[in-house]
Image 1: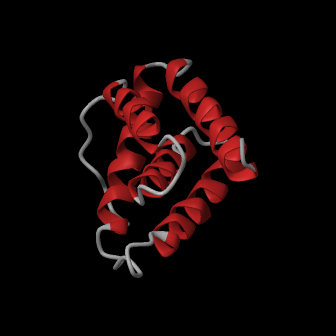
Image 2: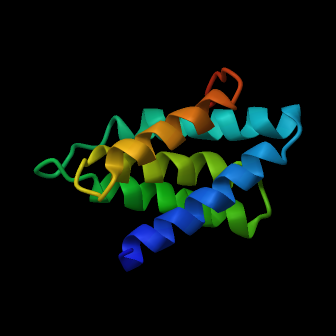
Length: 115
């Protein structure tokens, strides 16, 4: 397992743990953050098929929310991981996509509130 794959695995396990252990109100916060991340990254162009800028933006928001102890961090990092997987050059990316899709199904529908 490469360093990147190992790091992504640990991060995804952390994220799934936050989602699974959250009550309905916190899952809603995570869902809103995920939708906000989705709307934001859609405005950022891919660089020759690479999502590096999109990922960096999501990680920046993740770090801010995590530092504040806010579960919304899980929505931002889930979107960052999804962007990385969608580049389709990560070993086993199809399996990763399945796990991410299942994780998003744990979240309620959300209406984002962009700031």
